[in-house]
Image 1 (tube, helix red, strand yellow):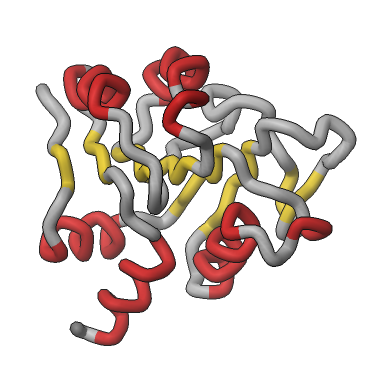
Image 2 (cartoon, helix red, strand yellow; image 1 turned 180 degrees about the vertical axis):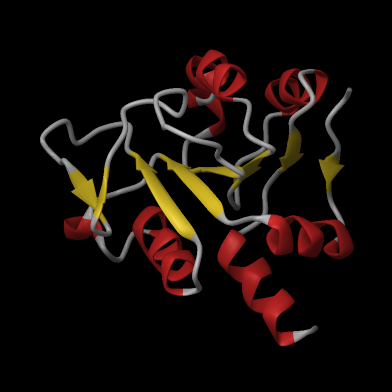
Length: 146
């Protein structure tokens, strides 16, 4: 079964409504608080989602947002609904095998992150994809009913 490229508000709203657990690939720790890769997951955590930190750097950090970190998405125990990604488009390819192994329902590439070939591989594996959208902005829009 092929995944869907999620591009419109109706489908984004449905994805957010069905999501409970979000792995954050490329999350930054508390000492990088103003960075979107910390601020957005912190917002989603406050909004009631379970956040699973998967930092790419920061090998000495053992928890972020009070949650234990994992070094790959595939190592996260249990089901992950969505993996939201904070990586430059040119840095996505090394994460493809990890994401395919983890088999989340969807992969969400944050604002400014678009990689059509990468997205196509996820879609072919049955994983839904959002590209170049801010999860926090979309969540606020959805919650406001706009």
